[in-house]
Length: 507
Image (cartoon, rainbow, N blue to C red; front, side, top):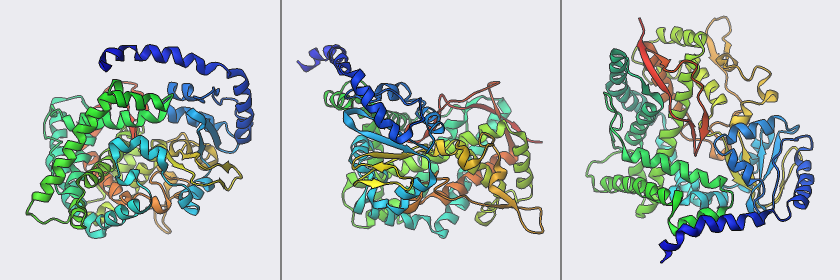
C-alpha cells in the first residue's frame, strides 16, 4: 500500500515547498542585518529564506562548495562568513589561524564533533573514531596510537609499501608503458592505498591492485565510493527531514546508500570474523582492538571502516593531485629527479625520511588540494573567538584548509603558485635543502591539537616512497591535452571523473 503512494512523494514536496517563501522579503532583510555582524563588507553572501536558510544556494554549489566558500572568504575582511542552514541552524566558516587554534586546541572540549555530525554519518561510520567524541574517541585514539611507533613505521615502509610497490604497482606501470595504455591513476592509487592499509592495520591482503590491465571490478570499492558520496551529500540537503523521510521509506538516494553501506559493512564484518577465527597471532591494529576485550562486533566493524576511510582516500587524493601538478611543472619534476638520483634505488625507512624536496612538494600539493578540505565542529556552549566573533551554543564552526591555502594574508601574493621552495631553506654552509614545517593552525591539513592525525608520518612515508619509486623509472603524462581537473569532495577530496594518464619510461 505504501509503495503505491510513493509516486506522489515528489508532488507533495512541490506543493509544500512554495509555502516556504511566504515571508522572504521581511525575513531576508532581517538576516542580512544579522550577516553584517560577521562580514559587513561581503556582498556575495547568499540570500536567506524562511526555514531553509541559504540551503538552495548551498545545494546548488554542493559539488564546488569549497571553491564557492573560498570565494566568499577571500572577500571577507575578517576571514569569517556565516551560512544559514535549515530550521534556524547556522554554520560559521573560519580561516583565521588564531580562531582555528582556539577550536582545535585552546578550547578543544567546547568544540566536539557534535550530534548533528554524528547523526548524519552514523549509518556509515557508526561509532568509529572519525564520528566519536568523549570517552569513545579517547579509547580508540589510545589504542590506535600504538600502531604508529617507530617499529611499526619501519615495518610499514620496508615490507608493506615496498612489497606493494615492487610486486604490483611497478609491474603494472611497466605493462602500461609497453602498451601505451591510458588508465585512471586516481583509481590505481586508491587500490594501492587500500591494499596497504588493510595489510598494516588488519593483517589482511585484499589484493585490490593487480599487476595487469584491466583491473578487476571491485564491488566493495564501488559501494565504498557510493557510501562516502551519498553520506556526505546529506550535509547539503535543502531540508534535512527530506533525507530522513527518504531513508524511512527506503527510496531514491537513501535506498542506494543503504545498499552501499550494507555491502561495506558485510565486507568489514567478514574481515573482523576472519581475524577472530584466525589462529595466527599478529600485531596489527585490528588484533589489538580484539584483544582489548572488545566483544561488540558492530563496534569493531565501525573501527575498520573508519581506518579504511583514513588510509584509502586521503593519501590517494594527495598523490593524484601531486602527479597532476608535477606534469604541469617541469622545474619541480627536475628538482625531484635530482634528489632521487642521489639516493639508493631501494629506499629504506631512514633514507625515505630524508627526501626533503619530495616532502616539500607533497606539502605544497596539499596546501592547494587538501585531502580533507573542510572539517566541522559544533559549539557545546556559548563562546567568543580570539577575533571577537561570538559563537552561540549549537552553532557549527568549520575551518577550511582549502580556503586557508588560498589566503593571501597567510601565504602571500604568490599563493596560486605551486612552489615547494616555500617549505625549504638552505642549510648553513651547504647547498642542501632543509625542510621547514609550518604552524599546524596555519596549515591544518592533518588537523591539529588533541585530534591531530595519528597517521601523518605514516602517510608521508608511504607517499614519499611511492613518488621516489615511480618517478625514478617513469614519467606520468596527462592523457588529455589541456586537461583541467575538477576538485570535488565527499568525506575526502576527489578529482572528479578520475585522472586519465599514460606513463613513459625514463631514459
